[in-house]
Amino acid sequence: MIPTADELAGWTLERQHPLTRGWVDDARRLAILAEEHAALDILLAEDLDIAAARAQRLAPGKPAESMLNRWVAVGNDLHVMLSMRFENMNLARPFVDATPMTRAPEPSDLPALAAAAREYYGVHNPLYVRLWTAEPGIDGTTPDRRFLGAPISELRPYDVPEGLALRPAKTVDHYDDARRAYAAVDAEHSHHADEATLQDLEDLQESADDGLLYDVTVNDEWAGYAAAIIKPDDALGLPAYVVRELVLAPTHRGHGYGRHLSALLAQSLPDPTRILIGTIHAANHGARTAALTSGRHDVGGWVQLPL
Image (cartoon, rainbow, N blue to C red; front, top):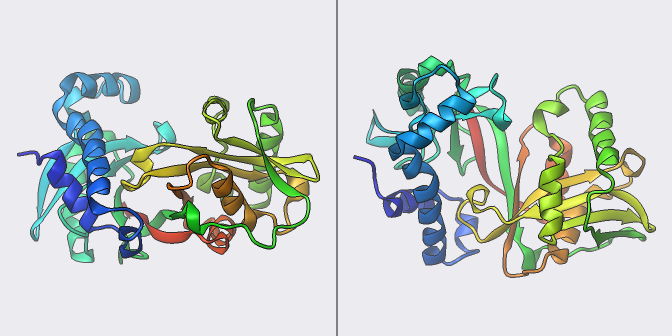
């Protein structure tokens, strides 16, 4: 039997990093988590029409049932909600998400989790199972993205270089410049393209429409973008702004500006009672160091169990 949204929310909250439990009242967080689980996990486990639409769009020729979420007992008192996903909607990168579960996963659980993923979603040839943990990692898995966040009230800019500032942007006039900035980093670091990609123009314009897109400027010259979005399903049940984009133009990299962007963005956002959080790939050491130096905390992340 599929658990209720409230049950899933309770198990999810128990698995969160202790630091985050002090940021928001449990009752408020449980309500947010229950809403997320109802709208995402339970609905996708029960609605065959949605599953059929997903199959048609993401897995043509595959049966609709193969896109339904599954609540599975995998032994050792562990139950898990499995879901078929695709990395950044890339149909060549299928994986099975196993985030909602009754307790934290342990290394001894990994063979059973892999077997369940193959049993229910083998038709899609998934590359790995994605798990979430508040710990630095799980033996037998490889790192994925980490969540880094902090209450906006704690993210105060200090020692900001003279001339560095954020300016509200109503339109995405420098998208080509931002694209060139990513291309420059990709050229320097072959693995970067697998760790971070520029947000779509439409997504950045959505942030602009919501008043959450900012031009990074140095002495009034455009130097990059900082953007956020209110997107609860990427926020661990926290009332948060999620970092959507932080990018510096090549000519403004290497000057120590990156470590100030999180705090400058936090203090520019309209609601100071929220949390600022975002994901950064564990292998993206430059971005992780900048976020940590700014005052954000690593509060958990995804790991991959190769299949």
